[in-house]
Amino acid sequence: MNANHSHANGGAGPTKTNKAVAEEKPPVIDAGLRSLDHYKRALPKWRYDLRQRALPLVRWETPYLAWMQAKLRSPALDSYFAITANLGTHTFFMIGLPIMFWCGNASFGKGIVHILATGVFFTGFVKDFFSLPRPLSPPLHRITMSGSAALEYGFPSTHSANAVSVAVYAILCLHDPSNPFQPSTRTALEALAYFYAISIVFGRLYCGMHGFVDVVIGSIMGAVLSLVEFYYGPALDAYLLANGWTSLCGMLLIIIILIRVHPEPADDCPCFDDSVAFAGVMMGLEIGTWRFARSAFADIPFDLAALGWPAVAARVLFGVLVIFAWREVAKPSLLKGLPHLFRLIEDHGLSLPRRFFMPASEYKNIPLRLRVDNVMPNVSDLPNLITAVRHPGRGRSVSVGPQSAADAYETLAYRERRRRESVSAGGGGNNAGNPGTGAGAGGLRNRGSVQDMRQPPQSSSNDNSINSNGNSDKNSDPARSSAVSGSRPSDFEKMMGEGTVVVSPPEDATGDEEPDVYIGQEDELGEHEVFSKLVKPRVRYDVEVVTKLVVYAGIGWLAVEIIPVLYEVIPGLGAGHLRVA
Image 1: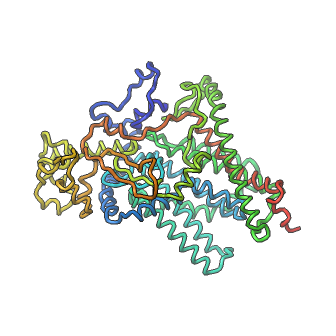
Image 2: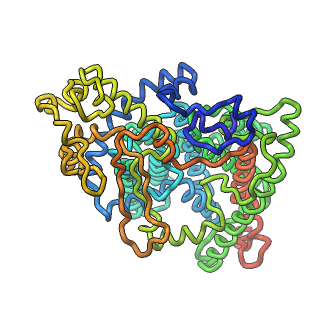
Image 3: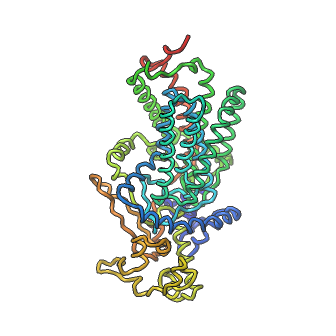
């Protein structure tokens, strides 16, 4: 299924101009409640059954997350956790990791790349497999500096896997007998590793981006990957080095097979894009280290004192420029040339289409400035990154309401569940559509706790009172009033399935002032209105998969082999004179 029809399974997508195809595959999202069966239709039965078993956990933990967020939130913590979340992103590691190979820490850098690449790949694998939504908003407020993070599924947390894997691997290395650090330095670095992991993991809960199950499973995956890499990674590297190019080709083949069997998501989720990018990095890393270990440059040492800070800074700057230059040249070249090859492959019936990606036969050209991933920024994005660092308040956004197709489907599904519970509890009639009104509010299944069961039903006259401005009066709605004060988790459960507004700070905002948060007051907007509020995913082209694989494989190869060799060619950057005769 191509990207032009992604709205049929993903809730949003560009409009297909081909009338014949449009008539053949009409959009799924229309009137009625057909979207409630979206995942049943989009997933194989066995995957759908597993998803249905896991979904109640997401719904159960949401009120407790919202209660915790309401108790803890402050402008300072909002900024802190939004900013530090960047330390667990793919972009941070993709920019920082190559420096380790250029500054004498190639072994540690390779281990970190292994655990991060496998962590990103397999968390994305699990995300697309289960297709579970993030905890509902509202009642949660989502605080983030990334526009793409909310478009992904929630289970498990990739941020948590990244942070915990790096922290665990660093701690294992610090406790290794060959570690050269003094005990005091080792203790300080270990404490920093613990603080880093805890801050990132808890921040995902605080920011409303993940639930308890998401971060726990993500953390476990990260820790397991670090243990495997620390104890078995060196043996694997020695095996690849000793057995020639056949063992290397075998590993590359395994990576390609894993990409091919990556589960198809039910919605247009970018998890697969990140998995492909890091799979490419892993391939380039293995090729580069295998070749570099056999070269005449492998025994050149790195000595900061002998080279001096200016030379080291110049090495890093040169390496970063080479990587960005490769990306700026390779990406548009591949996007321009690959469609012709893909059309030829399609003509011979050899295409392997993936859902939500438009096949080459259905488009003519691809915009050359297309942003095909969120792993590494474009050169044009650098000024915005610098501004975000200098003025973090401008880059942070606070959102309330569904932001992705998964959010919207879960909002509608939970709303329908509340309707059915209201009807089954004796609250049929006109009030059944509102989960907080009518006789249904007095039913046992609508009560969030034992304490709620002891209270009489709320009067429906308070639930829909409108102030003079045309908005719901929060002071007249007991559920909203108590939820805002954060008195009990059960109060936040009454807000689940409501709201549709996504809010970010205005683009022309100046200074470091806090962004305003506007909560949608229309509890029961129809299905069309819910999906109209979503950020529409862009068209994705079939050639993007190979483009990412080649570009990021090239980045890995450049970082570990080509750039270190170029250092020895450029006067003033090499360290060959430090080699022991």
